[in-house]
Image (cartoon, rainbow, N blue to C red; front, side, top):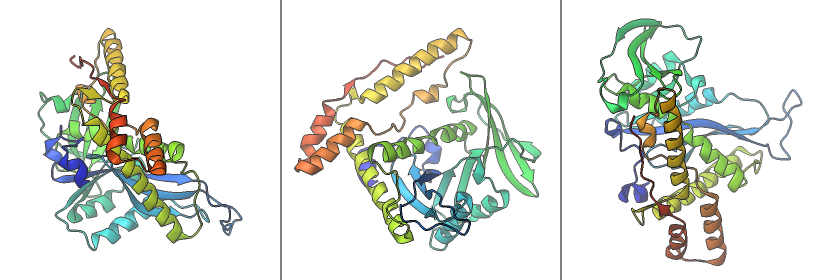
Length: 330
């Protein structure tokens, strides 16, 4: 983390209002159980499960909690709540931690209680949610951050207040509704964009399964599984750090995946204009990309043959390409 921040790597720099927050995308991740996992009382064996968090500022992965070793089916949200309660015993409540999770995490009473511990959340609003409108929250409609925001309001459920953001994608015209316990001083567009960035953690899981071949539990022993989580995260973070460092060696060059992403955005922009819409300009900001297969192979080979850090960083830099002139306006 310090290595990346010292080199100015900050994927949330477009959102200075979040400088005081640790912003984490969180999700459950399941893999095949170990071969010798004992069957549960019902005679069945399930997938082994974990919860990881991904820091949306630097892209680093953290093992959060073990869900199950596969001997029984277990929902991840109760595990998340229990782990947060444990961490609260030693956590400094002035340290603000924002969790971005899918709609299963919504629990009004729990997250209302977490505010005093410095834990906040963003999620997508459940379609069957019951809440009473309290008041509208003022926001700057002319600010680029708030592109697509239709409303920002305080709602209430059984005496517990929270905020709801209505965001209409200017490209697809689809309405998205988000719920958060963040204070009303945070731009609603920031809340919407953070939820879209949550999908970055799925790229990390894809790297883990497809490239690192972490598709099966090493053991049914809980301590062994926790160690598997730690080593998986350590391996991922090494690869992430190497790729990020290679990308900043020459400011005139970018990673091929970033070039492709920008070109795809430009195609979407042209198509959206024909329909009378546009791509939200915030999508043109830097984003945490999936670690490339080339980087992973290069690091693996460097470890096996004892190649120096500088030499294989240079090999990664050689794969970079010139920047694309972005259009981005609407």
